[in-house]
Length: 324
View 1 (tube, rainbow, N blue to C red):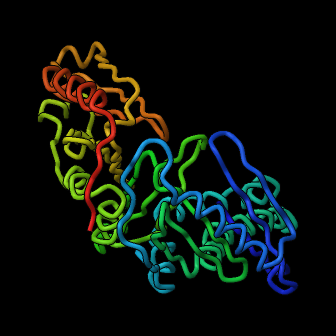
View 2 (view 1 turned 180 degrees about the vertical axis):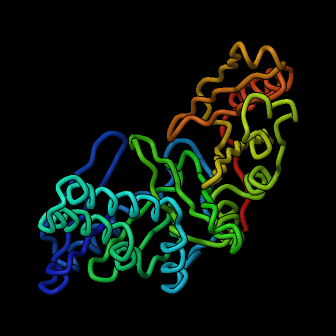
């Protein structure tokens, strides 16, 4: 559930309310501030009401995370992938000038400057004032300087959490926290930048201490996996009662994917010819929402045990987790 306050709408006192369900959404535009607040409160009341299957909900209500403006600006500047895209856009803007040799051809650079602005300085006012608040039955995300955005996530609809760390953030130990929701192809940002302690606190508020343990536990691939991939030392997979986590690492960023094992729908063990040569295998996991995690280049026997543990955990179904 999103409430969008564009700049002109804030001046005249109207906004847009969007309610999303799995596979579809409804939008109500030109609502007054009081109308939007009352309608959101009524929907939130139904979100918090127990229905059918009893599931665990956040016991704490209040602000969970607030991103300082200075920290947000530093994180945007230190995002190596963003800087790479900016340099690519600027370089492409110079291509017509290099081919034609005419100064007027530099006008093509102006077309890429708008995109560069959106990827760098334009992101700061859009993400400014980012806060995450726990509610009864869900979480609310507020952000935006000129255009305010209010997003409400239902607790039970969160399928997986991804914690991403760009290479230039490692010294400060900053991460990005995203969640996967059913019916959405992409990920929803829960925190554009946060310390690792804050990210683990969000995971604990969401699913409990076992999920945090799954995030922290590392089970690296065997040493012989270096003959299959140069990234074997940062690959990891672990299955704990109720939750599982897969860690994959690239040079520019590392990602930890954690999800409840009750969300697992299909598990497959894959083994290519080069993996058979070194006694390795990969476990492909299909969950009910979000990207498919893959535990790559595990020992063949360990991969079979990992797949069996995931199947056993998924048959147990959802379990309630106590939270403080």
